[in-house]
Image (cartoon, rainbow, N blue to C red; front, side, top):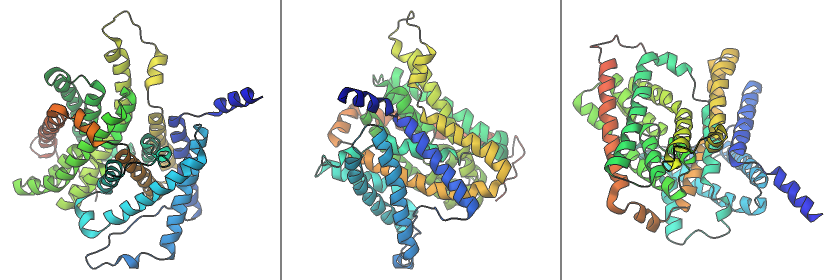
Amino acid sequence: MSEKNENTSKALLISEDALANIIGFVLIVIALITVLLGVKFGALSFSTWGNGTSLSEQVNGEFFAKLIRTYLVLAVFFTVGAKFKGENPVKFLGGFSVIFVLGFVVRLISAEYTFNRYLEWAFFALIIGLLVANTVGVPEWLKPAVQTEYYIKTGLVIMGFSVLFSNIVNFGLYGLAIAWFVTPVVIIFMWLFGTKVLKLDNKPLVITLASATSVCGTSAAIATAAASKAKKNDLSLAVSISIIFTILMMVFEPIIIKAVGLGELMGGALIGGTVDSTGAVTVAGTALGELAQTTAVLVKSIQNILIGFIAFAVAVFFTTRVERDGNSENKVTASEIWTRLPKFILGFFAASLIASFIIQPALGKDTVSAVNKVLDQYKNWAFVLAFISIGLSTNFKEIKEQVSGGKPLILYVAGQLFNIVLTFVVVYLVLSGRFFPLPNIAL
């Protein structure tokens, strides 16, 4: 009888990717229904405080209602998911509650006026996790909830709803040239430079760094790491390097653009194509002006569409070429590629297609925007939990061994410099007005 129960339990197990898709789509459906019915479902967000604005002004009844709602929604979904993954839901919920509190602290600190201007919450989330992991250590009871990929995969499925294909129409061939031409070229350059010049044996790390540099930092790194079967330490290293340089570029790139007089249109496009994180792109673009912010976000949004395509390409490439050990007789079946493909990417694509070609035509752009306003905060909370988990699962000693000789750092810097130069060349060709008419971008 016990054996039968055990077999039944195994049959009920659901993969992490499938759960990410299920949770993501259920949240999307709930957000859509609540927007149509006018019911409040939004997660807690923090307005900027400090510099004359008191934090106490936003801490009211609605604040606590949103806080409780956010915790309950995320706790229920992720804990039930953990149960379906075959984990102990009680142990998971205990650890999750603590990570959620840490996430609350992160969001609170990062909303402070000065921090909010120069640093993203991702930085603080990573730092808090790193401090705990490399000082007192991660207690055993907390480890069941330290699940980076579980949280971020769900966040990426939710994010898919905001990646509208209409952005391609808005910016046309200009955006395609900047985002879709440069990105694969940079990935190929970094792959060849990392494997042929630097002779890095850790090929999953090379492709993960390349994707993080060329597309959108952490989101692309997670998808590519899954496709190439990179180790957790590889992902932690790629994300850490990406975040550090994202902060530097977010602060200094607008200053340099202003100094050389590049202008808002070209400057915004350059930022959108080179700064890794979507949030950092928005902040950096805002520093130049409204046109720069709109252009930067458009370029980055078009670039984000490539996440799924790149993950699929990496899965095929690693399965058919990298891991065949030079044996040309070793045939690769479609089932092997399917096994390697990160299934949550299918959810990302599906959400994007549904929003672009079903919901927006049927219900209008305003409805999609309202739904995305609700979903955006749940996505951010999922990402906060993921970044804290990355920090909690990162050991400085292990990273030090990985950076031995500085080759991963050299790879990232060389790749990012190449990315900036190539993006600038393309931006100049299509947006300087010397070769093509300038696009009319609505603000």
